[in-house]
Length: 268
Image 1 (cartoon, rainbow, N blue to C red):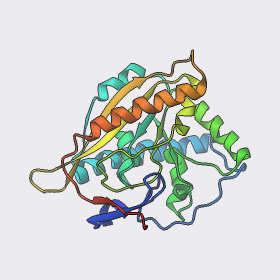
Image 2: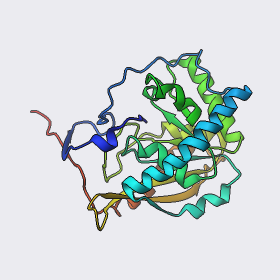
Image 3: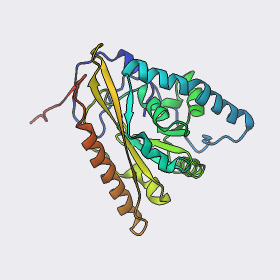
């Protein structure tokens, strides 16, 4: 996931794509830092715990509620399903269609739970905001095996603490896209190993009656559980299929196209 100001500046009407799995259409232009084994994912000092509370609860949460409501007239359906695991850690998967709103919407729908979002290193590489995003719960994807060990431990720790891990399995931002792109089962290895509950949310688009601007309605589904009697590879594939099929079904509720996506024909 990448966090930029693209939501408000994107005036594109048509986007041509070639590769559904790898094409990226965010307006961000950031040189990512390297996330190596020295990157600290979990800070235990009182000061760092305070800055997390301050930036996440005092600053970001009110902004998140205000932003998605004022800009997208946001509403959600199915939030009550999350109450089943109100005190448990779980994984939440969603479609990736906004730069700013995508980090905010999970904050809104899972409140009062704390979210930790797996993000692209861009999110911790910005000159000023990059220093704050870790306090907002950003978990940047690591570079290399040594760094991955710390990343994996951070995920397992946050789940054991009863928090929510947010993942955008499509990985790349396609602004206002109304379908669900194919995605691998790689990111489902975490709940498959831990036996943790899985939820998904699908952001759909409709037109606001009075302004004509896109309105986002978020559908929440789950929980889905890994079958721990099966091999881990099978568990993660089954979880991926359940989430993908559910999100595809929910995506059909979109009835407004802000940006048209057209696949380029392969040259002969």
